[in-house]
Length: 383
Length: 131
Image (cartoon, rainbow over all chains, first blue to last red; front, side, top):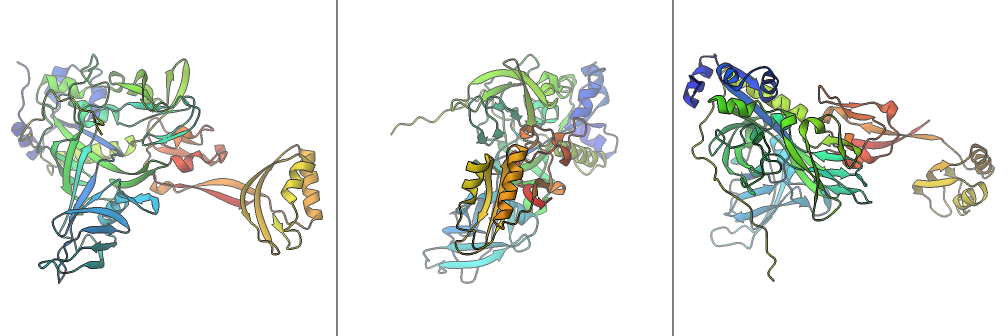
């Protein structure tokens, strides 16, 4: 009879210290000489991870009330504008918001500083009301004096992402890094066979409420991410050939570690933020085992031309080729590089593996599954 | 090059190009009329021309300090993403295929400066050291 395990059974094994945990890279290697049935028999949990620039990220803070109180209507932190259109002293720091005079400094740097325990300068203005009379405030905030620091990232951990190249005659500075002219290089950004949503492409075990590693502490999947789509082309191994599903994640930033949340600046593009995410996948049955055994050479991705504003597809490749340092396109060998750090992703997968092995991290079954049959709308310009 | 105050107003760069047929790339200039001036240039040309250009500069009491351009790398803060390695053609910045860590070999670096803009953490900077 084929193996069937529930979340509860796997958690009981974790509590007894008997669960067998491998990273997604280790199980991909094991899959070379084991069948899905054998992997399902032997392995209970597979840890996946990614550490890459994820622009759609941010942090919600509550500063506490001054005396007399202020209803902040315009606010900056170290000169970077933050969203203050929610109540009186709740502020949302968008990772990509930039300092008006320094385009290389922005929200992600504020988030990194607050996580590191540094002081940040708060300036806020208001019209003054009967209940919130104060009109101006100038002070410093830090991790110790804030009521809440909640990281809430609306779109992280893309399931696959296209490779960026440039056929034009000029260097292009993009969110996919510096793209040299005339196919001078090719940049990609995922951790391939270690990437969370490529190991559970149908999201059988990842959904609302999934407990994850986020920025050095425990976080949760709070919703499907924005621009989430499932109506996408799959390759023969059942994985999307381009960007597809995404995750919205949430976690207590006051417990995060600056080693796993890092501000970034891409030349002539702007500020972004490296986010470290790790997700454990329970090997519930043979079918899940077959999914987590996926190898880099079985994951296809598209190559898009950022030299053309329409980003046309020029070809396809796989992550084994991309990670080898060179791909071939139009009879030309092109140097490849990643924007996400596989080195750091491996570190996260190992940390999560150790936490599950020592019983300090239990798996959570999704409270609700993600939507099916979701495609994207584009924006009509009507005026 | 350091100019004494009485040569600051002379078109020295023009003379170098016109009379000695050398390529001049001005990297940094700090010149005020009537005062001492400093000019950081890259000079490329045939050896004989460059040597004669140097003799000309010395005749004008211009002090010359040869410098080398190197890249400084704040390695301890590196995340090992690899964004710099994709623009590094001499192969001075490479991701090790097994450890996936970034390896920097300064001896291969030609100081083309592409890594400075490619690094999302701004970990590279140009250094002008006296040779």
